[in-house]
Amino acid sequence: MASSGGLRRELTIGAAIVLPVAFAIWILVPHDHTNEIAVEEIVDRFRASTVPNTSPPPSPSPSTSGRVVPVSVAPVTSSVPTTTQPAATAGVVEEVSLVEPGVYVYRTSGSESVDAFSGVTHEYPAETTITVTAEGCGVLLRWDALEERHEEWRLCTTEAGIELQPRSLQYHEFFDQETPEHVVCDRPTLVVPVTDESTGPNALTCTIEDRPWLPRWEVLESDVREIDGVTVDVRHVRMTIDDDDEHFEHYVADWLLAPNGLPVELSVSKQSKSPTVVGDVTYHETVQLALVSTEPLR
Image (cartoon, rainbow, N blue to C red; front, side):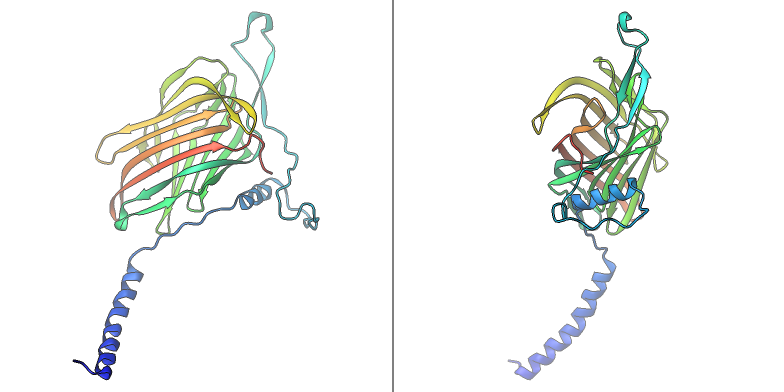
C-alpha cells in the first residue's frame, strides 16, 4: 500500500499529465453557445433604426421607466388599381396596406441542430419577435430567435396583392462560426392575392450562397384566427423544397398571413445535408410561431 506522501506524489504527477491534456482538448474542440434576446432589447433596436438620434433622450418619468411605450408610426400603404373589381366600381383605386412597422411578439417552440463535433442543439425561447421596418418598395421583416439565429425577408404591394421579394437571408451561428446565407431568386412571388383564388405551385429558381435552391410556393385556403380577442382573416401559404441528391434538403414552411402580410402563424420543418470545411453536416430545424397581438411594440 502506498504511503500518504507517495499517494500525494502520484496524484500530483497524474494531475500534471491530465490537466495539460484536458486543456489541449478544451482548446482544440470548438465550443458552442447561444444567447437569448430580450423583447425590450429588440424594441430598443427598432427605435434606434427608425428614430434619428439628434438630441439626448428625455429623462424617464416614474410612469414610463422600464416599460415599452408606443410611438406614432404611420402604416405602409400603396394605392394600386385592382383588376378584380366589379364593373360598377371599375376605375376605383383600392389601397393595399402592408403590415405596420414595429415589433411583433410570437409564442414560440422549436430548435435547430447540427451533427458536427458530436452534435449540438439550439433550443428556441418561449417568445421570439418579428421586427417590421420600412424599406424600398415595402417592408423588411426580421425574425429573431437567438443572437445566433435570425431570418429576413421583404414584402411589397402590386395590383395583384402582396409579393415576397427575391432577396432574403437565413443566418445561423454554430461553434462561433457565423453563417449568413443570402437567398436570391429570379423573381418575386405572390403570397397574399387580392382574390380568394388559390395559386401555384409556383416554382422559383433561386440560389443560396451561389448554390441551387429551388422552392415551390402555393397560396391555399382562406381561414380566420382569433388573436387576443381580435378576429383576423388569414391566408394559408406553403413553401416546399424537395431535393433528394447527395446533399439533400427537405423543407416545408406553412404560413398563415394576414391581409397586410403579417405572419399570424408559422410552422417549419427542415432537414438538410451540406458540405463544409469539416465534412458533410446534417441540419435539422423545427419551428412553431403564433402571434400574441396584432398591435406592435414600438
